[in-house]
Image (cartoon, rainbow, N blue to C red; front, side, top):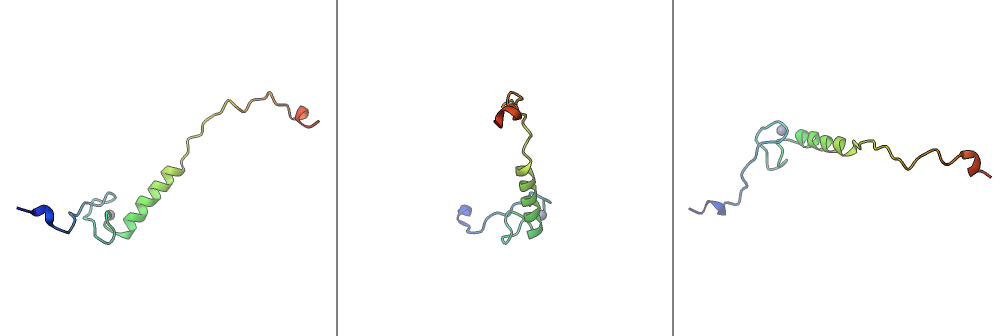
Length: 67
Ligand SMILES: [Zn+2]
């Protein structure tokens, strides 16, 4: 049994809608789902948590800065 010699990949379910993926849009089932995944990625990547920095304090008075 040499099933591992098969050239074709085993189809995986689309991570977005769980349909069977297609070779064209692997690992998604369609271009739409690929874009949905991309959008999800982007929206998550761009969601940068706002970190309050202690570097910015009021020790620098604007009046003293401009002399
Ligand atoms: Zn899909």
